[in-house]
Image (cartoon, rainbow, N blue to C red):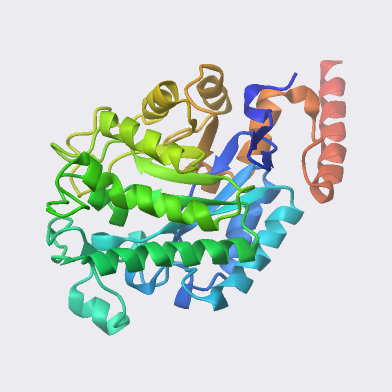
Amino acid sequence: MVTALFQPLRIRSLVLKNRIVIAPMMQHAAPGGFANHWHLVHLGKFALGGAGLIITESTAVSPVGRIGKDDAGLWEDAHIQPWREVVDFVHQSGSAIGVQLGHAGRKAGSKALWDGGQALTPEQMLKEDPRWARIGPSPIPAGPGWSIPEAMSIAAIEKVIGEFESAARRADAAGFDTVELHFGHGYLVTSFLSPVSNKRTDEYGVNREGRMKLAVDLASRVRAVWPKEKPLWCRLSVVDGAVDGWGEEDTIQLVHRLQSVGVDVIDCSSGGLTEQTHALPVARGLGFQVPFARRVKSETGVITQAVGMIIDAHQAEDILTSGSADLVAIGREALFDPYWPLHAQWALERDTGFADWHIRHKVWLEKRQTFLDSLSTHSDH
């Protein structure tokens, strides 16, 4: 019996072999923006583990917009070939791979989590790289410890949109199967969406329609340069976590607009606009963001991806069979167990054995299982 979790899914010309996605996870391991052996092993092991789709960490479209100093990048052509080596290995191992394109905006410049994750001072950013800066819709900092970002001119907005277009072209040249636009977690586009951080009085502010303009324009322009046969993902913070901030009804309206310009999948996350998340409507428990995916799917008909504390095969299966989402994404759980997809299949479809494991692993595991089964048979007697 094939369960919902292991049903293929076709989106445009891309066919995913199952509904399991590896969510983006920041690695801060790419000096100069270049993918390297770390990314080959880090992402490659998830392909060996059986995931249908692997999405890279947020990959900067500009050195200005890096979250951390050593973020991965696609802001120059020299970044293409290192990514292609990762993409080729993932494809050879049986999975699809997408790249998440992002710009940190006013949340650019922070230490890695293992170094505390605090915001760098403008002086520290300048010392690390003179190109690095904080920009946003309005001169409002992301929170305590963050400097005031430079309010973007119309020309600066147009420049960023062009950087996303160029990065998408490079992603295609590197062989990625999909692009995910990062419009969540308080980064550049999120800060334009939220009335808390966007106080502009021009066409990119004033009301919800104006605050959505950057997201819609950016998605439309990327869709125009991204091959029509390849799907386009978008990650949204369905609620931004700020009091009087962006909410679920706002997201529904935005998703309708994103669908109209060719976005295929909405990756439903939440929070991140500021350090405070008092307005999140649900506690952080297992699958706490699934209701967001359910509502977005129900009210727009778009393909949705659920993410956030999905840790168990039966939990993931229930998300799909209940109609809450079309895809489930795991992140930290995949770090804990890179073979989570294959172990989930074993738990849900034991009769498939090791059929979907890589041949170089399958042959040894089948021998191991035969031996274990023989021990079990002897113990029964």
